[in-house]
Image (cartoon, rainbow, N blue to C red; front, top):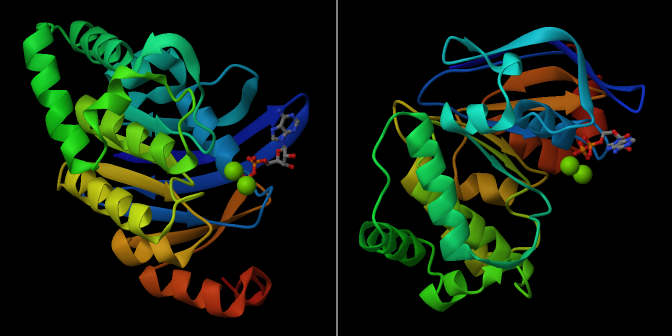
Length: 250
Ligand code: ADP
Ligand code: MG
Ligand code: MG
């Protein structure tokens, strides 16, 4: 579903991704772990097409298409969703307005009918209930005054509404307490655990992976994937640390 080959990328002339290879098949939840500064967030920004992140080599194929040749909004319409480590605030725009606009512009790009206000609200209520987020939160301006946990749950409501084929989730567990972690993890499972979907789940901690069980775990270090294994690799990283596990022969 997603195939990254020998990807190199730089920011301000500094090489951050340095020959990264990774494949995610349909039906797969693939966790990415790695030390701070390894390039995990950079990978998610490059996949999303964020300005300032310059791809200098390699390729990314998404559902048979050259992803890097698409504009960010075209990537979203093609079924790619990005969850951010630091969700942005949008004063003056309510979540409901923002989400309806995002959904309908993607539907339009795919040649589908826009949802009416009533149809959209029904969908939004269903997804808000799934994430145990009060509908009143969705009437407020995007992320303004939201706690860390509320931002992450609102972002997962957005993912539920957009129903992407593939999600790249960057530290969705950061700042969540135990109960919120369970709600968000269950939400990821409900929305994305599907034979036709895929997930790149970037996380520092094993605890999210106890709820969202990964099929594969890869370690990203210094801009490339240095080791891939099953769910047990994440447990070993938690117990033994990155240095010990990465020191082994691949
Ligand atoms: P991770 O998410 O794995 O912690 P990042 O992708 O955020 O790592 O960062 C990888 C490296 O890129 C770090 O050394 C970081 O300092 C550098 N970096 C990230 N963003 C920028 C930027 N806007 N300008 C310069 N360097 C950056
Ligand atoms: Mg980090
Ligand atoms: Mg990061």
